[in-house]
Length: 314
Image (cartoon, rainbow, N blue to C red):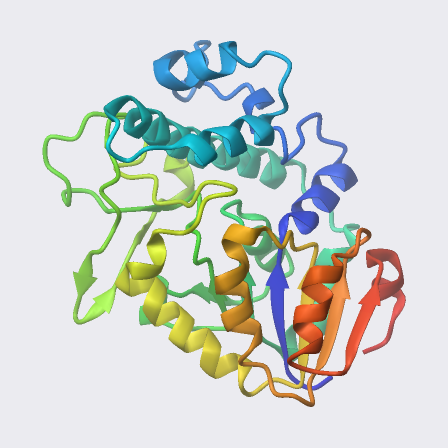
């Protein structure tokens, strides 16, 4: 392996949370106990009446199942649904920001995936994450590796590994002064199509403001077909990672959930990989549908568990 594209799914986050022994789990964001503001004893959920009502109506249903059911019945012409959609995006953005602060405070260098990134950084041509948590960024930062996120001001000084997050990130926003008359938690589907010098652009929330409400929580909900593919910063990001994918000799996919709503994006990305490239599907629970799709691109497909992959010399 000389040059690899890394695609990250939720499995990497689950592994890190478990390694650190956190009491929260990335698949259960409604249990994160996120404060409404830094230092406040009031819960963020108390500030989000539409979301709180939905949760109260489903007391025995798991978090992602609640989101899945909402997405299946979501109507963009219904004001109540629009408000609930906006509150969900705000909550998830702030919940995973809250989790990221915990991760930073409890980071341990013994995490094996952090060591793997450190050892293989010279071979990484790019990283694509369909999550909006900051696990890839924290891991790269703690490994003292330079990176820049596509579609952000970090592109102005494109050091290190390019990182693309087409479904948004919990630290992305529209930028101060861009939205007038904004009321926290009440923005309905603005979507960030800001153009600066001909480039699509989102702003990055600094670490000391991660707990503050966003102007627009520009993220794609779980199980939701992305509306962001029409945004310029996402389109330009895909063009960049497509060019990267065409130059690699290895594809590494970590713990990716191949949900039907995400398949057009994932398929279009993987289809750019050269036919002779190796494809490593690292997942304790293999997805045969995904594996068969990758095999249509390259016949060098290896299915492997995370434990076995970390022991290999690539």
